Image: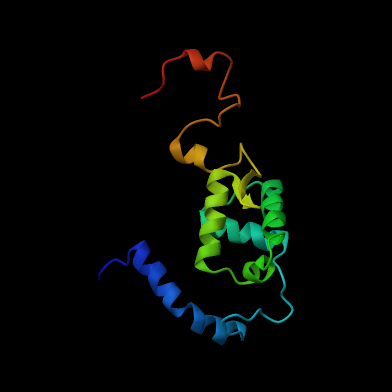
Length: 140
């Protein structure tokens, strides 16, 4: 049996998503599910965890990011049914710890940004171990 790679799986999901939405949610492209205007804090945290693959995301950072996204015109509806572009925007925000507002990047978390563990370094500006650990040669 041939293995289904991640890209092929995501392409298949994207291909069938409109049909799935209309069948299961009773919505068509461009519509919100009945009674849904924006996700709750819990729903956004679950969405972020699913997109990033990290279950232990900071709740305060998630609330700050959700508030920033909801402040953007038209984002309440997009967050109720995120598309691929919005999902990428959320992933980038979590990895960099920033979001765009008014044409400039704003910080919503520094120590909670996922880029630091991804590249294997401690968060700059934070204590990275016991006292004097910086003076020891790195582990191989």
